[in-house]
Length: 78
Image (cartoon, rainbow, N blue to C red; front, side):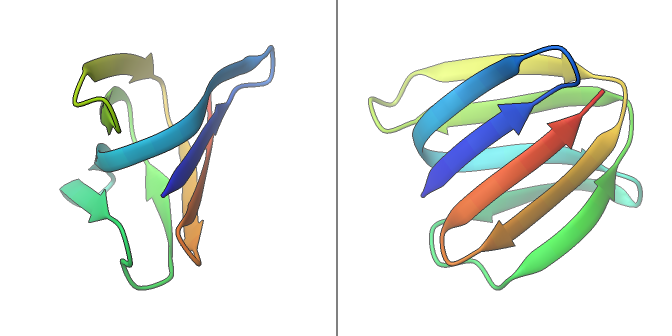
């Protein structure tokens, strides 16, 4: 699936990933390929991204929203 992480200042990440773990307002949740469409708010915490090369990256956010539709994920983060 394709992921973009965008802040008001810059684009933090753009590329193919295998999985994402997000800090949702009701608790952590994960997204994998072919996940059902979703829009959710995010709270302060850490995004965990596992890319297609199996390497893990972490991004600290102060909140935001995530949308997944047709294997494309957009995270608008603070």
